[in-house]
Length: 317
Image (cartoon, rainbow, N blue to C red; front, side, top):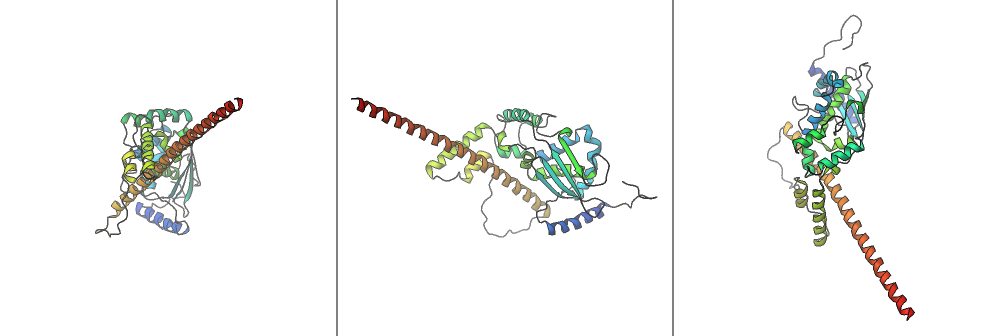
């Protein structure tokens, strides 16, 4: 907290901070409807394995222990007005004491190829589905490998660079700290964004057995109807529950606000899983089709050679 003239600045209550952040958010949404604020329900900053593991990793380093805590109150009262996750970068707008929000940019290095190769080999025998990976439902030993310092999935302080437009001289200001905690909350909604941030492909961690099973289902579907795998088959292979079609019936009761938000998060997570699942299936289908075309070409070439030999023999006679 800064010192102005001969007095300290006026104390601002949490209620006032929240109201100020909400007013600013409404203004920003008018200009940019795609803005994505961080909204915390209750006192818990993260509830899923990925969100908790992200926060625990940051809090575990001595470089951050005494600084990152400054951002907890900011992210709780809705000061993070926008947070966008991109490959190797996070951008946010955080409301501070001034009228305009501060701009924060965090750059995170990608996972080294050696580390990623080792993680893929370990996960190949442990993971059974995309849903299992995204939900964090895997053996404890694998979770420990994922969170291992310097060798796991999560970045260390030396792999993180940050910058903020605020005048605070501290190496990690409250706005940067709030953004770092905001990332954990965003991973609760869509864990797939973690892999986007670290510049790696999520489906690389799926076991070979699942890929082989999807190949079999694809070949069966092509023989019978030539259509894409049915939703029921996808649900069975990848362990996901796909949403039923819209019936058009109006719900009898309105869900409470907290329940509605939870349902929204679940829907977003399912959509993310479905999207990645389609990519895996599409990739597998392409590989299978490519192999078949190569076999056909090889067979056709062999027939031509045999035909040419027969013609030569007849000419000699």
